[in-house]
Length: 64
Length: 264
Image 1 (cartoon, chains in turn blue, green):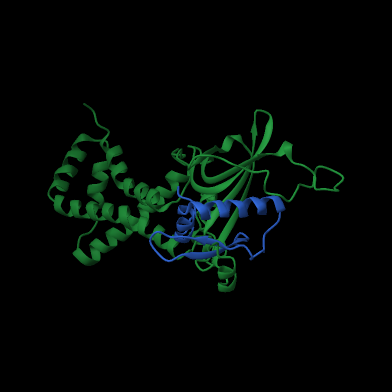
Image 2 (spheres, each protein chain N blue to C red; image 1 turned 90 degrees about the vertical axis):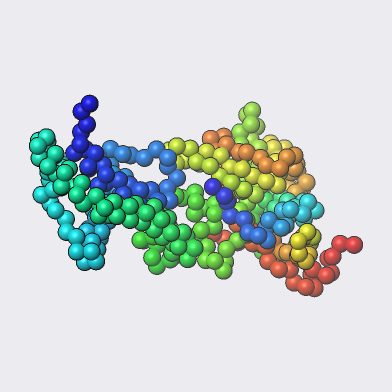
């Protein structure tokens, strides 16, 4: 079964540079060991099919 | 050749119930309990009874056709004479019979699947929905955990990120990655996760934060992770000791931040 992945996430993961940036963010969050509310991280995504995206990753809590 | 004709009749009558149930249910188990008084059979029989009630009422109201209970009982009887007479009487109404079962089978194949798609589309089954007690697929916990189906459409995250501790040759290793796919075993348990963008680190190599008294407080640095080569990484659930699931939302960056940190 396919896991959750939005179009925006697909575009980001298709960009190798942005993918490494995202991995770095996730590793830093994992090392910090808490729910990240830091919105200073900006990932620049170069899309082949559309305009560039500037995205801020934010961890969100599970729905109630 | 002896054929248990009444058994075939019962099967034909109940078959739409099984189809309707399987088309509607979102279950993670492949092995189901088909014992005569098991949950699956009981639900399928209930579906079949309901469908026949609706179809018989519709046939009576719209087409003027009524159920001939004598004929039905004749088909189910064990006597060859009664069965033969019932079959001949039935053959005279074969067109109505074909319409009856063809329309019912088409309905049970399409309508429950569409109802399930509608429930998922409008998220009537999410845990916070007021209709969850009716529509929630309680036999599919991993579906809700890993597809974001419990979120409102507006609040839905963009991807699911997991951190799993795996015992590899006696060494606890932390794997992190983005969940792409997940598969179940026959009993409905999670069989394996397919991850991308995977990193790993051995927990034994964790160093204490400078000045910390014990090794329990990890260093903040993310440098201890090593990227795992390859596009996809398959993690068998049976080898996972703990699994941490997190949801990540990708928000549009503030234009100032975006321009200010634009790489050259």
